[in-house]
Image 1 (cartoon, rainbow, N blue to C red):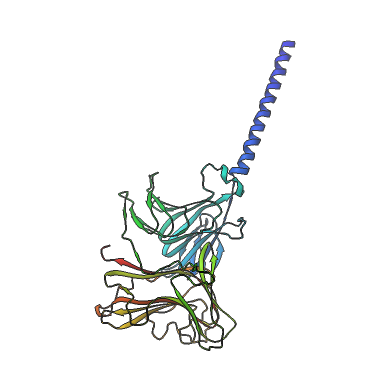
Image 2: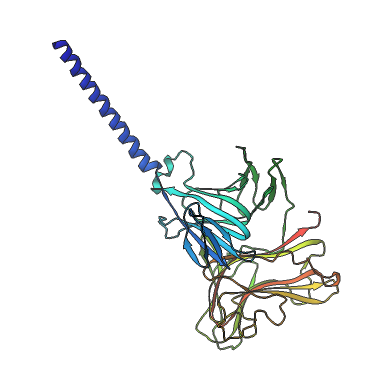
Length: 439
């Protein structure tokens, strides 16, 4: 009898000891996981930067959005027509430096995307224990169409941004800069304007590398990748980085000025700032009701040949900008005072001087007002975009559609400027791209 009681006592004691050890182990593991491995969700926002976007939730009902709204995971977002444009912003509300922007995906025209994951570590100081795992983990799925991806250059943590197309091709981005992606049913084109991008086939664990300043096309069915011809950047300092000479906010290699119609009225101001993780040139004018133009250019005086483009079959202007404010409706009473205008001066094959103008605005005219949608010498209507959001513009191939004797053969100057009374615009890049005929 005493032997059985002794065995029972030992069993109880050993059971208690192992239970205690298990509780201690679980407590240590749980504490370690909470402190060093747990994550919290980041904020996602969908914005219509031009026109409207459709957002489809779990109920499969599509809501139309013309402004900004919080975005849930796995919501499908798409521009509502070919001229619309939408942006998905991923923000970190826990950043200690006051900034929040992590990355954005801009959807252009007939495209779709869905945010699947957006996580960050619960504690900033936990990242040394993550054993190589990225700190920010962001995943987009169901990509189809044309996209631009921007990654902030001042992130406090590492980033792994994965984009999955509807054919299960994965594009991995982790370095600052911006990237363009075109995904259709048969191929994926990736162009890097920042760091290195990796393309993974549907069943591959080895990525194809796309280095900065280059582009590649991956064919899904054949699992083959090939490099695209390099584009030729005709501008210097297309990122508008400020001069390092000290004391001047002007971007290096650009000539900038402000010209009010009334000499005694205020001039526009320039400043080099940061917005959403990128360097921007801010153009601002306030406190007046008289016109002025404030902007920058590269090139030569009218009639002089600055860049020979006769050997190229493609020429395009690309820019990203943020319209914060304008005081005049549309682009003024003559259509020539948009808060952002692009002007390309060129010489055509007949030796004549000519130019193209693109205008962008946010404030519409009241129903009783009659403001023109174009300027006297413009060949296309101005483009209305949403305020306080990023918009990416690509002119497409400017050389297409010209008659032989009207085709531009030499560029004289490229200029971008704000016009009107009061305006506030940020420009993050300005590119003039030529493509080789051998492409």
